[in-house]
Length: 146
Length: 242
Length: 212
View 1 (tube, rainbow over the protein chains, first blue to last red):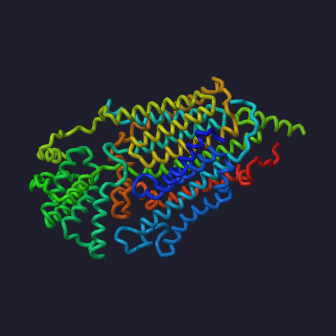
View 2: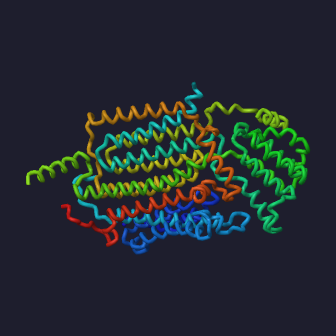
View 3: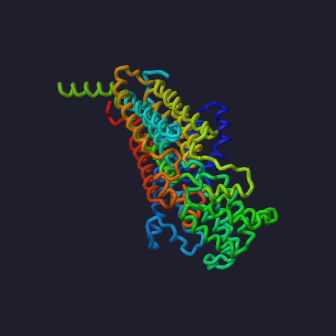
C-alpha cells in the first residue's frame, strides 16, 4: 500500500490515463499515436493502480487469466483482418477490398482502425501480463541490503 | 572542414553513446546491469536511425493539406459519384494543385520562406483567375514537379493581381493558405515506423531477458557471472567425484 | 531555384535568399547539442553507478532525453512511444527485475575493463570511419531518404488519405511487418509467462521445480 498522497493522486489520474489511451488509439490516423502507444499507456494505467493499491486489488479488476486470451485475441484481430481481405479475393491486408466503391478510401481507414485495435489489445495485454509475471513473484530474502 | 564536421557530429556522438552501451555489456558481470547496457545500446541505435531519417528544413510526417482534400471529397460525395473524374471548378483544381505541389521533391527545401510567399501568391492567382487558367497551371505544375523546379514557375504566375488577396472570400483564402502549406518538406517516415515498432519489441525482449535473470537468481542465488561460473565449476567437480 | 529567389524578391518581401548548406548555430542546433550532451552524461553515469536502482532511474532519464531528441528530429510518433515505453514501462520492468535479483552490482576489477575498452575503441573507430562516406546529416537527397521514404509521402494522400504518414506506412503499406512485430510482442509475453508466470496465474509465489 502506497502513501496517502500517492493513492489520492492515482485515483485522480487513473481514469484520465485510460481516456487518453483511447484517444491515442483512435486518433492515430490524424496525429502521433496508434495501437502500440495506446496499448502501453493503457497498461501503464493499470500498473500505476497496482503500484498504489497492491497487485491483488488490480488483479480483481483484470484477472490474470484474461490476459493471455487478450494477447491472442489482439493478434487474431490483426490476422483476421488480413484473412478477411483474402476472403474477398485480394491480397493479405489489402484493405481496399473492404469498401471498393469508396472515393476516399474508406476501406483503408476501416482496415487501419481494425488493425490498430488488434495491435493495441495485444500490446496492452502483453505489457500487463509481463508486469503481473514480475510483480506476482515473491522476492527471495536477499543478502545484500539496499 | 567545419561543414564536414557539422554534417557528421550527430553520427559521432551517437556512436559514442552506442559504444557506452556496448562497453557496459562487455565489461560488467551483473546480468541485470548487462541488460541495462543492452537497453542503452538499443536506444542509441534508435537515435541513429532517426538521425539518418531527418531532413533539414523538414517537419514531422503528418500531412498538412488534408483540409483542402477533405473539402474536395465532400464536394464529390454531394454532387455525383463520377465527379472525381473532372474537376470543373477552380476550387477543386486548387486542391489538386496543393497536393501536386506537396509531392514535388526536395529540391526546394532551401528557399523555404521565399517559395512559401511565392506559392501563396500562386494559389491566390489560381483562385481569382478561375477555372480554365487554374486547370492549365495545375497541369503545368504537375509536369514541372518532375523537373524539381516548381518554384521556377513563380514569376509569371504572380503577375495577375496579387493585391486581390484582401478581397478574396474566406474559403478561398483558407485554400490559398493550405496550398502554401502544401509544399512542406517532410522528414522520412520510414525509419520512424521501423523504430516505433522496434521500441515496443525491445521492451518485450528486455522483459524476457529479465525473467531469465530472475530464474537464474532463483536457481543459483546470484546474478554475477563470476559467481555463476564458480558455481557451475564446483557442481561439475562434485559430479566428477561421485 | 535562382528563379524562385528572384520571384520572392519580386513580390517585394524582405526575404533574402539564404545559404542553407552551412548549418548555422541556430536555436535548434543548440537544443540538439544540449540534448546530446545530456545523453552522453547520463550514459557515462550509468557506467559508473553500481547501485542498480540508480542505474534503472538513469536509464529512464536516458529514454526521456532521447524522446526529447526524437521530437527535435521530427519523429513525433517515435518520441511518443519512447516516452511511454522507455521512461514508463521499461523502468517499471527493470525495477521489478532488480527487486527479484540483486540491488547492487559487484565491483569490477580494473584489469577486466581493459579488453572491453580496446574492443569498444576499435569498433568506434571503424564506425566513425564508415560515417566519412555517409551523406551529411539532414540531406534530403541521401539514399535513405530519396526512394521509398519519399514515395510513401507522395503516395499516401492518393492511396490511403490518412494525414499521419507513419500510421499509413505502419498499418497499411507495411502491415505485414507490423503483423510480424505484433507476433514478436505476443511471443515475448508468452515467454515471460512460461518463465515466471505459472506462479503469477495461481496467485503469486514461486514455483519450486526442484533446483534447490
